[in-house]
Image 1: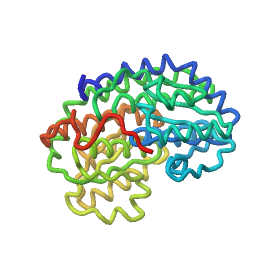
Image 2: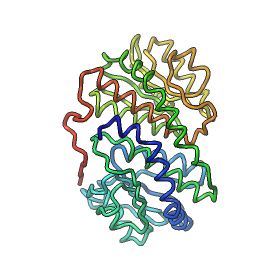
Image 3: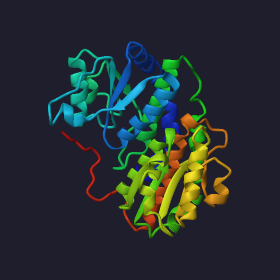
Image 4: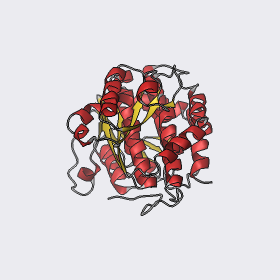
Length: 339
């Protein structure tokens, strides 16, 4: 199975992940009830799942969430105090020693630990009080796709468990199917940008994670120098790089921040930027013609899951347009172990 097949497999994976992890999510909610905050250890794509958790668990569950610095636990051997923390490791393989070291220290300090991984027998899982198995099936492609959306789904499922809600995620597979039906249009948009060598990727709120993950996929697969920013951070300096033709990719989903996001996209257009947008706001039709559309009524907090699928498709087809091999990204391996 190749990368494109794994992208297309995601509705099925999300449905399965949601079903099999209902009880483990409740266990995590039980652990979190005695905690004042959460600390997440992750790398790469999994780091972006952590960014999503910051907004989901923060807005919906009132839980302060921080992304830890694994080097403090491993290379420097100076772990911070973790009083009051739920310690969460997110890793597709569960094998990176620095991520494992964070959960080991959490256990040493008597804190509850959670592993979110596609490998339930991994070293990360061995040091966790609760293991959430993504159950995404083997992911053979080097670039993570289905394991990432499964991670986001688990974050949302844990949020549901902590809030006592249920059934909110039932429509997720169909939202992803809607995104997949736009593959032809996404391929045309990507092919039109075959000459792109650098870009800025923008998002805010829940979809800041999408901007970071979209940029990562472009870096991994297309060798484009893609720099992700919150739209707010982009205004604090990086907007100065804009000039006519500068590629800007943006995620704009209706929610409390949408007017600010649209304003930044307008400013990019006025500067002559070449725009590609993912979103569901009607104003995108005027600002960024050909925008890749999400379902109109999607809840903003769930939108990063179908939104990133469009980003994955864009990166995949841009890779082909650049005559690169999406199955063999330069200098990368499927499992990366950092200490």
